[in-house]
Image 1 (tube, each protein chain N blue to C red):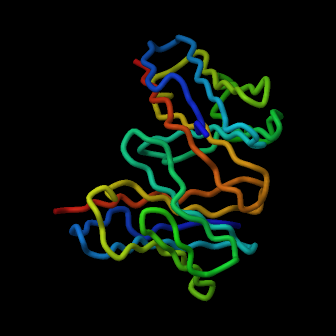
Image 2: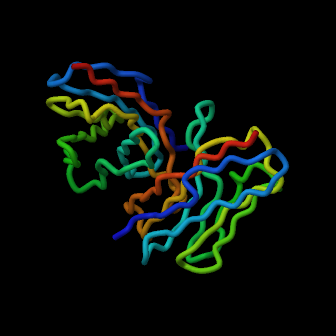
Length: 113
Length: 114
């Protein structure tokens, strides 16, 4: 069975400091993994996706994630947080079922001046 | 590319009334999904379509909920009769076929049932 766990429900950082949002997954298949961001009153926007082509994936807005099979992790990072990064972030694993996604519970990122 | 378009953005209705939510997927996308988001339960998949055909509706809460996709460019989610516990944000999403194809989400409809 597939599952995804976001290890922190809330993360708070200062502007200009690094961001780390943690995600662990389990999958019986070679997984597809995604990170989405949701700003208030908006839909989910794709940040990046892992599709087995490269373990380090670069996304929009300076975010990147590294797929580590040995650790079953897909953590999201950004070197320097910006106020506009404050949002909720979802780690998502593609289940074996065609086009069915499993969403993590979300991590709310707060960025302080 | 206009993205996935949902209407209305906000809907306030009284218990017992019929509610219809609308979605226009991205042109050319093969799959359409309806999700519901609440604080308590997070994101829940209600139903999804492939080439206008419902594939899995196991997430639809009960018979009060129904969804249709009469053509490739339009889908509706109907609740009849509505209840206060249906209050949530409802998202429509679409995607291309392919294991690695991501979902593209609309901005959602915030439904409040009083």
